[in-house]
Image (cartoon, rainbow over the protein chains, first blue to last red):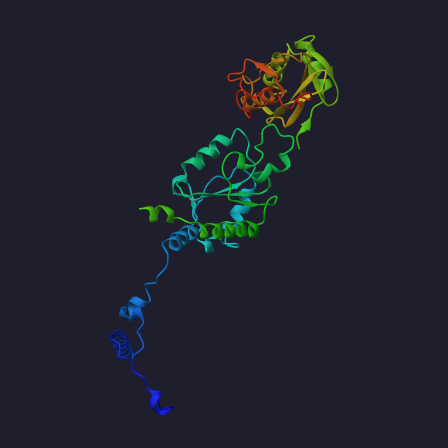
Amino acid sequence: MEVGGVRKYIYSDTELDREEGQIIEELKANSQQALTDPDEWLDEELEQNIFLTTVDWVINWGRRSSLWTAICFPACCAFEMIAANGPRFDLARFGMEILRASPRQADLMITAGTLTWKMAPNVRRIYNQMAEPKWVIAMGACAISGGIFASASYAVVPGYNRIIPVDVYVPGCPPRPEALIYGIQMLQKKIAKRRNIDLGKVIKR
Amino acid sequence: MTVALSGKEIASQIEEKLPESIVESSQDYLAVKNDALLAVAAFLKDTPELDFNYLNYVTAIDYYDHFEVVYQLTSLEHNHSLIMKTRCYDRENPVLPSVVSLWQGADFQEREIYDLMGIRFEGHPNMKRIFLWEGFLGHPLRKDFM
Protein backbone atom coordinates (compact mmCIF):
# COMPACT_ATOMS: atom_id res chain seq x y z
CA MET A 1 0.00 0.00 0.00
CA GLU A 2 1.28 3.39 -0.97
CA VAL A 3 1.50 6.07 1.64
CA GLY A 4 0.69 9.73 1.11
CA GLY A 5 -1.12 11.41 -1.78
CA VAL A 6 -3.04 8.38 -2.92
CA ARG A 7 -4.92 8.17 0.39
CA LYS A 8 -6.03 11.77 0.07
CA TYR A 9 -9.48 10.91 -1.19
CA ILE A 10 -11.09 7.74 0.02
CA TYR A 11 -14.48 6.72 -1.37
CA SER A 12 -16.50 4.10 0.37
CA ASP A 13 -17.93 1.24 -1.65
CA THR A 14 -21.08 0.66 0.44
CA GLU A 15 -24.42 1.95 -0.92
CA LEU A 16 -25.59 3.41 2.40
CA ASP A 17 -22.65 5.74 2.64
CA ARG A 18 -23.11 6.88 -0.96
CA GLU A 19 -26.80 7.82 -0.32
CA GLU A 20 -25.84 9.83 2.71
CA GLY A 21 -23.22 11.63 0.73
CA GLN A 22 -25.72 12.43 -2.01
CA ILE A 23 -28.17 13.97 0.51
CA ILE A 24 -25.48 16.13 1.96
CA GLU A 25 -24.31 17.21 -1.47
CA GLU A 26 -27.85 18.19 -2.44
CA LEU A 27 -28.40 20.16 0.73
CA LYS A 28 -25.13 21.93 0.25
CA ALA A 29 -26.04 22.79 -3.33
CA ASN A 30 -29.40 24.22 -2.23
CA SER A 31 -27.99 26.18 0.71
CA GLN A 32 -25.59 28.48 -1.01
CA GLN A 33 -27.66 31.57 -0.21
CA ALA A 34 -28.51 32.89 3.30
CA LEU A 35 -32.14 32.39 4.37
CA THR A 36 -34.32 35.49 4.23
CA ASP A 37 -36.16 37.11 7.17
CA PRO A 38 -39.53 35.34 7.74
CA ASP A 39 -41.16 38.76 8.15
CA GLU A 40 -40.10 39.83 4.68
CA TRP A 41 -43.60 39.18 3.35
CA LEU A 42 -44.72 42.22 5.39
CA ASP A 43 -44.49 45.32 3.30
CA GLU A 44 -43.15 48.51 4.75
CA GLU A 45 -46.54 49.89 5.88
CA LEU A 46 -47.60 46.69 7.61
CA GLU A 47 -44.26 46.32 9.31
CA GLN A 48 -44.84 49.49 11.31
CA ASN A 49 -48.25 48.36 12.54
CA ILE A 50 -47.82 44.71 13.49
CA PHE A 51 -45.75 43.37 16.31
CA LEU A 52 -45.62 39.87 17.72
CA THR A 53 -46.16 39.25 21.44
CA THR A 54 -48.01 37.06 23.94
CA VAL A 55 -51.70 37.44 24.70
CA ASP A 56 -50.93 37.79 28.42
CA TRP A 57 -48.63 40.72 27.88
CA VAL A 58 -51.13 42.59 25.72
CA ILE A 59 -54.03 42.05 28.12
CA ASN A 60 -51.95 43.18 31.09
CA TRP A 61 -50.67 46.19 29.18
CA GLY A 62 -54.22 47.24 28.39
CA ARG A 63 -55.39 46.76 31.93
CA ARG A 64 -52.57 48.54 33.68
CA SER A 65 -52.53 51.48 31.29
CA SER A 66 -56.16 52.48 31.78
CA LEU A 67 -56.98 52.09 35.46
CA TRP A 68 -60.22 53.93 36.07
CA THR A 69 -60.99 54.88 39.64
CA ALA A 70 -64.33 54.36 41.35
CA ILE A 71 -65.53 57.38 43.32
CA CYS A 72 -65.37 56.24 46.94
CA PHE A 73 -63.51 58.78 49.07
CA PRO A 74 -64.89 58.76 52.63
CA ALA A 75 -62.55 61.29 54.28
CA CYS A 76 -59.66 63.75 54.13
CA CYS A 77 -57.14 61.69 52.09
CA ALA A 78 -59.44 62.47 49.16
CA PHE A 79 -57.91 65.95 48.97
CA GLU A 80 -54.47 64.49 48.26
CA MET A 81 -56.16 62.25 45.73
CA ILE A 82 -57.73 65.34 44.13
CA ALA A 83 -54.31 67.05 44.15
CA ALA A 84 -52.81 64.01 42.45
CA ASN A 85 -55.52 64.27 39.78
CA GLY A 86 -54.96 67.99 39.32
CA PRO A 87 -52.66 69.76 36.86
CA ARG A 88 -49.56 69.77 39.09
CA PHE A 89 -49.18 66.02 39.62
CA ASP A 90 -51.36 65.05 36.66
CA LEU A 91 -52.40 61.44 37.16
CA ALA A 92 -53.65 61.48 33.55
CA ARG A 93 -50.08 60.66 32.50
CA PHE A 94 -50.75 57.10 33.64
CA GLY A 95 -54.06 56.71 31.83
CA MET A 96 -56.27 57.16 34.87
CA GLU A 97 -57.64 60.66 34.62
CA ILE A 98 -61.22 59.41 34.59
CA LEU A 99 -63.04 59.09 37.90
CA ARG A 100 -65.98 56.84 37.23
CA ALA A 101 -69.22 57.79 38.93
CA SER A 102 -70.51 54.29 38.25
CA PRO A 103 -68.53 51.47 39.89
CA ARG A 104 -69.55 49.20 36.99
CA GLN A 105 -67.06 51.04 34.76
CA ALA A 106 -64.21 51.18 37.28
CA ASP A 107 -61.20 48.89 37.78
CA LEU A 108 -59.55 50.51 40.78
CA MET A 109 -60.77 51.61 44.20
CA ILE A 110 -58.58 54.13 46.01
CA THR A 111 -59.83 54.01 49.57
CA ALA A 112 -58.98 57.56 50.63
CA GLY A 113 -59.87 58.01 54.27
CA THR A 114 -61.28 56.81 57.56
CA LEU A 115 -64.02 54.23 57.32
CA THR A 116 -66.69 53.95 60.02
CA TRP A 117 -68.68 50.79 60.59
CA LYS A 118 -71.82 52.64 59.54
CA MET A 119 -70.26 53.42 56.14
CA ALA A 120 -68.64 49.99 55.72
CA PRO A 121 -71.59 48.15 54.09
CA ASN A 122 -71.80 50.85 51.42
CA VAL A 123 -68.08 50.60 50.59
CA ARG A 124 -68.45 46.81 50.40
CA ARG A 125 -71.37 47.27 48.04
CA ILE A 126 -69.42 49.63 45.75
CA TYR A 127 -66.61 47.06 45.65
CA ASN A 128 -69.04 44.26 44.80
CA GLN A 129 -70.54 46.33 42.00
CA MET A 130 -67.17 46.81 40.30
CA ALA A 131 -66.56 44.48 37.35
CA GLU A 132 -63.71 41.95 37.44
CA PRO A 133 -60.78 42.35 37.27
CA LYS A 134 -60.58 44.93 40.08
CA TRP A 135 -57.89 46.22 42.40
CA VAL A 136 -57.80 48.17 45.66
CA ILE A 137 -55.22 50.67 46.93
CA ALA A 138 -55.42 51.37 50.69
CA MET A 139 -54.44 55.04 50.92
CA GLY A 140 -53.29 56.51 54.23
CA ALA A 141 -52.94 55.32 57.81
CA CYS A 142 -56.68 55.04 58.41
CA ALA A 143 -57.17 52.79 55.41
CA ILE A 144 -54.25 50.56 56.42
CA SER A 145 -54.99 50.04 60.11
CA GLY A 146 -57.53 52.61 61.36
CA GLY A 147 -54.71 55.11 61.96
CA ILE A 148 -55.13 57.31 65.03
CA PHE A 149 -58.49 55.65 65.68
CA ALA A 150 -57.04 52.13 65.63
CA SER A 151 -56.59 51.49 69.35
CA ALA A 152 -59.76 52.64 71.09
CA SER A 153 -62.47 53.60 68.67
CA TYR A 154 -65.91 52.03 68.85
CA ALA A 155 -66.97 53.25 65.41
CA VAL A 156 -63.96 53.01 63.05
CA VAL A 157 -63.06 50.00 60.91
CA PRO A 158 -59.43 49.00 61.72
CA GLY A 159 -58.25 48.80 58.13
CA TYR A 160 -60.05 48.29 54.83
CA ASN A 161 -58.73 44.75 54.60
CA ARG A 162 -61.45 43.77 57.06
CA ILE A 163 -64.01 44.63 54.39
CA ILE A 164 -62.35 44.15 50.98
CA PRO A 165 -59.07 42.58 49.73
CA VAL A 166 -56.30 45.18 49.38
CA ASP A 167 -53.51 45.00 46.75
CA VAL A 168 -51.26 47.95 47.60
CA TYR A 169 -50.82 49.87 50.86
CA VAL A 170 -49.73 53.54 50.69
CA PRO A 171 -48.68 54.86 54.12
CA GLY A 172 -48.93 58.51 55.24
CA CYS A 173 -51.36 60.77 57.05
CA PRO A 174 -52.25 61.79 54.44
CA PRO A 175 -49.79 60.44 51.79
CA ARG A 176 -48.34 63.04 49.45
CA PRO A 177 -49.54 62.82 45.83
CA GLU A 178 -46.06 61.51 44.89
CA ALA A 179 -46.57 58.62 47.31
CA LEU A 180 -49.95 57.83 45.81
CA ILE A 181 -48.54 57.91 42.29
CA TYR A 182 -45.72 55.59 43.40
CA GLY A 183 -48.31 53.24 44.88
CA ILE A 184 -50.21 53.23 41.59
CA GLN A 185 -47.00 52.42 39.71
CA MET A 186 -46.41 49.51 42.11
CA LEU A 187 -49.90 48.28 41.31
CA GLN A 188 -49.18 48.58 37.58
CA LYS A 189 -46.09 46.43 38.07
CA LYS A 190 -48.20 43.91 39.94
CA ILE A 191 -50.75 43.81 37.13
CA ALA A 192 -47.96 43.32 34.56
CA LYS A 193 -46.93 40.10 36.32
CA ARG A 194 -50.42 38.67 36.27
CA ARG A 195 -51.14 35.48 34.27
CA ASN A 196 -54.48 35.63 32.51
CA ILE A 197 -54.34 32.33 30.64
CA ASP A 198 -54.09 29.10 32.59
CA LEU A 199 -51.58 27.05 30.54
CA GLY A 200 -52.49 23.85 32.40
CA LYS A 201 -56.07 24.08 31.21
CA VAL A 202 -55.04 24.85 27.63
CA ILE A 203 -52.77 21.78 27.45
CA LYS A 204 -55.43 19.45 28.88
CA ARG A 205 -57.82 20.43 26.12
CA MET B 1 -70.45 91.30 68.02
CA THR B 2 -73.36 89.67 69.80
CA VAL B 3 -74.00 90.97 73.33
CA ALA B 4 -74.05 88.16 75.92
CA LEU B 5 -76.93 88.88 78.29
CA SER B 6 -76.54 88.33 82.02
CA GLY B 7 -78.26 85.17 83.23
CA LYS B 8 -79.10 86.85 86.54
CA GLU B 9 -81.10 89.68 84.99
CA ILE B 10 -83.10 87.36 82.77
CA ALA B 11 -83.67 84.96 85.67
CA SER B 12 -85.42 87.74 87.62
CA GLN B 13 -87.64 88.42 84.59
CA ILE B 14 -88.53 84.75 84.32
CA GLU B 15 -89.21 84.40 88.04
CA GLU B 16 -91.99 87.00 87.76
CA LYS B 17 -93.84 84.99 85.12
CA LEU B 18 -92.84 81.44 86.02
CA PRO B 19 -92.05 81.15 89.75
CA GLU B 20 -89.69 78.38 90.97
CA SER B 21 -88.46 77.46 87.49
CA ILE B 22 -84.84 78.61 87.93
CA VAL B 23 -82.29 76.48 89.82
CA GLU B 24 -79.29 78.76 89.57
CA SER B 25 -78.26 81.88 87.73
CA SER B 26 -75.04 83.81 87.29
CA GLN B 27 -73.45 86.38 85.00
CA ASP B 28 -72.73 83.69 82.41
CA TYR B 29 -75.74 81.37 82.38
CA LEU B 30 -79.03 80.37 83.91
CA ALA B 31 -79.90 76.84 84.98
CA VAL B 32 -83.49 75.70 84.63
CA LYS B 33 -85.53 72.90 86.24
CA ASN B 34 -86.26 69.92 83.97
CA ASP B 35 -90.04 70.30 84.17
CA ALA B 36 -89.95 74.03 83.45
CA LEU B 37 -87.52 73.80 80.51
CA LEU B 38 -90.11 73.99 77.75
CA ALA B 39 -92.09 76.80 79.43
CA VAL B 40 -88.92 78.87 80.02
CA ALA B 41 -87.73 78.24 76.44
CA ALA B 42 -91.12 79.34 75.09
CA PHE B 43 -91.00 82.45 77.28
CA LEU B 44 -87.50 83.32 75.99
CA LYS B 45 -88.57 82.84 72.41
CA ASP B 46 -91.93 84.60 72.51
CA THR B 47 -91.23 87.64 74.73
CA PRO B 48 -90.74 90.55 72.29
CA GLU B 49 -87.90 92.22 74.27
CA LEU B 50 -85.91 88.95 74.40
CA ASP B 51 -87.00 87.31 71.10
CA PHE B 52 -84.51 84.40 71.05
CA ASN B 53 -85.44 83.16 67.59
CA TYR B 54 -82.24 81.21 66.86
CA LEU B 55 -80.76 78.19 68.64
CA ASN B 56 -76.97 78.05 68.09
CA TYR B 57 -76.46 74.58 69.52
CA VAL B 58 -77.55 71.98 72.02
CA THR B 59 -74.89 69.89 73.71
CA ALA B 60 -74.48 67.65 76.75
CA ILE B 61 -71.76 67.09 79.36
CA ASP B 62 -71.27 64.12 81.68
CA TYR B 63 -70.31 65.20 85.25
CA TYR B 64 -70.41 61.62 86.67
CA ASP B 65 -73.28 62.33 89.11
CA HIS B 66 -75.39 64.24 86.63
CA PHE B 67 -75.71 65.25 82.98
CA GLU B 68 -75.79 68.89 81.98
CA VAL B 69 -77.50 69.92 78.73
CA VAL B 70 -76.53 73.33 77.40
CA TYR B 71 -78.52 75.51 74.99
CA GLN B 72 -77.08 78.64 73.42
CA LEU B 73 -79.76 81.02 72.22
CA THR B 74 -79.37 84.10 70.02
CA SER B 75 -81.74 86.84 68.98
CA LEU B 76 -80.99 87.82 65.39
CA GLU B 77 -83.35 90.78 65.85
CA HIS B 78 -81.74 92.32 68.97
CA ASN B 79 -78.27 90.80 68.44
CA HIS B 80 -77.92 89.36 71.92
CA SER B 81 -77.35 85.84 73.24
CA LEU B 82 -77.89 83.71 76.36
CA ILE B 83 -76.72 80.35 77.68
CA MET B 84 -79.41 78.18 79.24
CA LYS B 85 -78.61 74.95 81.08
CA THR B 86 -80.53 72.14 82.61
CA ARG B 87 -79.35 69.27 84.81
CA CYS B 88 -80.46 65.69 84.77
CA TYR B 89 -79.61 63.50 87.80
CA ASP B 90 -81.17 60.23 86.63
CA ARG B 91 -78.36 58.12 85.14
CA GLU B 92 -80.37 55.03 84.26
CA ASN B 93 -83.13 56.64 82.26
CA PRO B 94 -82.54 60.38 81.77
CA VAL B 95 -85.45 62.17 80.10
CA LEU B 96 -85.80 65.83 79.09
CA PRO B 97 -88.45 67.73 77.13
CA SER B 98 -87.57 68.35 73.48
CA VAL B 99 -87.36 71.89 72.09
CA VAL B 100 -87.88 70.88 68.43
CA SER B 101 -91.37 72.41 68.55
CA LEU B 102 -89.72 75.81 69.20
CA TRP B 103 -86.47 75.55 67.22
CA GLN B 104 -86.31 73.13 64.25
CA GLY B 105 -82.51 73.14 64.43
CA ALA B 106 -82.59 71.08 67.60
CA ASP B 107 -83.78 68.01 65.68
CA PHE B 108 -80.46 66.38 64.69
CA GLN B 109 -78.57 67.70 67.72
CA GLU B 110 -81.00 66.13 70.17
CA ARG B 111 -80.68 62.87 68.25
CA GLU B 112 -76.90 63.16 68.52
CA ILE B 113 -77.15 63.68 72.30
CA TYR B 114 -79.41 60.64 72.55
CA ASP B 115 -76.98 58.62 70.43
CA LEU B 116 -73.78 59.51 72.29
CA MET B 117 -75.02 60.39 75.82
CA GLY B 118 -78.23 58.41 76.12
CA ILE B 119 -80.51 61.29 77.13
CA ARG B 120 -84.03 60.81 75.81
CA PHE B 121 -85.95 63.86 74.56
CA GLU B 122 -89.69 63.59 75.06
CA GLY B 123 -91.79 65.09 72.28
CA HIS B 124 -89.07 64.65 69.62
CA PRO B 125 -90.61 63.54 66.31
CA ASN B 126 -87.91 60.97 65.43
CA MET B 127 -86.01 59.89 68.56
CA LYS B 128 -83.45 57.35 67.33
CA ARG B 129 -79.68 56.98 66.84
CA ILE B 130 -78.09 59.26 64.21
CA PHE B 131 -74.33 58.41 63.95
CA LEU B 132 -74.19 54.86 65.25
CA TRP B 133 -76.21 51.95 64.00
CA GLU B 134 -79.23 50.24 65.47
CA GLY B 135 -78.06 47.55 67.84
CA PHE B 136 -74.99 49.42 69.12
CA LEU B 137 -74.56 48.75 72.84
CA GLY B 138 -74.25 51.74 75.16
CA HIS B 139 -73.67 55.46 74.66
CA PRO B 140 -69.98 56.11 73.92
CA LEU B 141 -69.54 59.69 75.20
CA ARG B 142 -70.53 58.71 78.74
CA LYS B 143 -67.53 58.71 81.09
CA ASP B 144 -68.19 55.10 82.16
CA PHE B 145 -68.51 53.74 78.60
CA MET B 146 -65.16 51.92 78.26
